[in-house]
Image 1 (cartoon, one colour):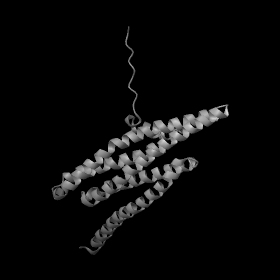
Image 2: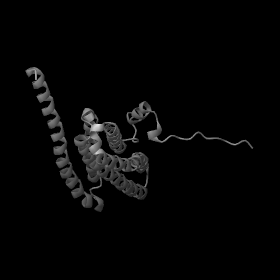
Image 3: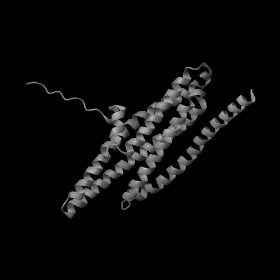
Image 4: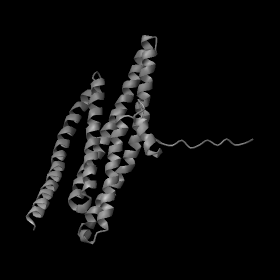
Length: 233
């Protein structure tokens, strides 16, 4: 009997970049905002690894080697969890939407109630995914600031982009978590996690202030450099 060979189905992140972007713009539930938040974190992580590697090639940054090597290892340890969360969120929120459709189409009140509970339970899981993404991206903001300050000065555009992407990942996760908690307002989960969102936002505000200080310091360098050029010094 002839064997049937099935082509391996690619995960979302294994798809070509153009196809993945089209997937986000296809008007479907999956991939959605949770996966987008995880993708921002992954972009941040990759940029930070690049800055660490480029800095390691510069003899003048030899004294920063221990710090940058440590940061690179920390960032690489975060990457697998964000990859998992990217795929996990896409799968699980797709299930939420599928069950909601089934609920809306159900005829009996009992079936509607059952499916409503199932969708809310799955939405809690999806919200947990958002919180995990936020936590990982929070770490990347801190790593980004250190790399900005310690890495090769010529690639601070990369570390700045990494910081920005990590901040975007946190903000996106907070949008998702707050929206889901609003939807889950009648459940204990919502009450237990509302304060968590507020605390995370306050933590983000502090990290954003540090990120802005990186931008302003670079702006000051640019102004001083141009002034020296104008003065002919």
